[in-house]
Image 1 (cartoon, rainbow, N blue to C red):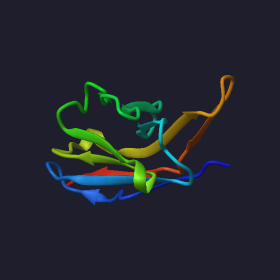
Image 2 (image 1 turned 135 degrees about the horizontal axis):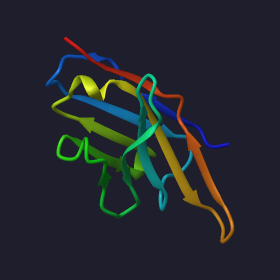
Image 3 (image 1 turned 30 degrees about the vertical axis):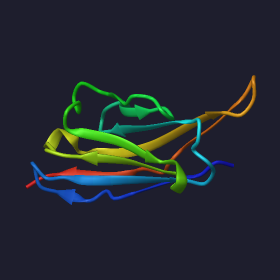
Image 4 (image 1 turned 180 degrees about the vertical axis):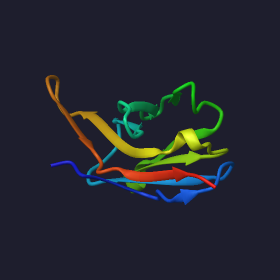
Length: 119
């Protein structure tokens, strides 16, 4: 079963930077990596996604501040977060999906990592 493990969530001051990591238990080649977040009392929302060899897609709220990347050799995805704002406070989740056959996909979610932006 696919397992994802996020790390890097901490308390950071407004304007600061942070990098989240997502280690996947299997190969991430040809799959899509994505980051989502969920703030208290709100629905989970997409933050960024990146296919293998494709262009990143960002939510309007983070475009220009966050950068999603991946290292296929390490089966790891990253989310570099800059110019953090208090409204970025949330639990951040990593998601991965890859086609394994004509009819099927393998996918999984991480357990989440807390990011708190506060002075």
